[in-house]
Length: 230
Image 1 (cartoon, one colour):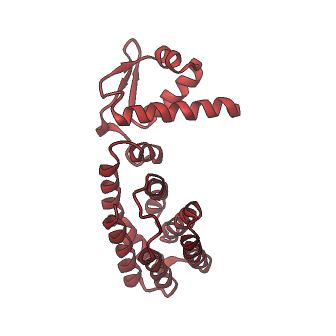
Image 2 (cartoon, rainbow, N blue to C red):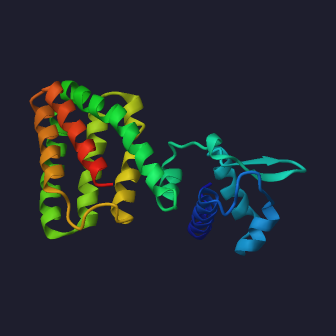
Image 3 (cartoon, rainbow, N blue to C red):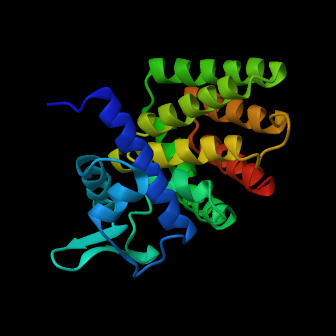
């Protein structure tokens, strides 16, 4: 049975509030909280609080033990690939470190994914990436950054899917949260970089032409260009 819309919204809001508090250090590692305390502090029912704590526990951010309470866990135990955690960290004072960590991770897999996509992408995926680049050009010129962001997400999502590698595809949420975080937290210039758009076009073209070396090289250039602007 699905939760009612209002209950679901309250749960999501509380989850984001608690997650952000843990990430920022307002709830430091080792601190013990209780379900009743969370419920009272936020004026919400125990069932809403329980569900939020359950999710945080699945993310490795808290540990619940009978007769002890809910203990905030050190960052070394967190599921750092969870898109929600990435979103909270990008909105925190830890943003610079998170951006660097994510950028280094992307350097390790997206160029390889682009090379695989050049070997495995189907015509529909090639057309989707080409259309995404066209949309990036249009929205970059008009200054519609949300539409530009959406097109950028479509491009990278399709590329990871086109790689045919389920592990790479599973990292889509992480990449999308990074793209969103860089847009929403003003870590990008006032207008999209023409160089970045041109490099996306190079990747799309190399994949369409099945040139894996060129696709990998252009994808690496995208990441280098993005890192230089952080």
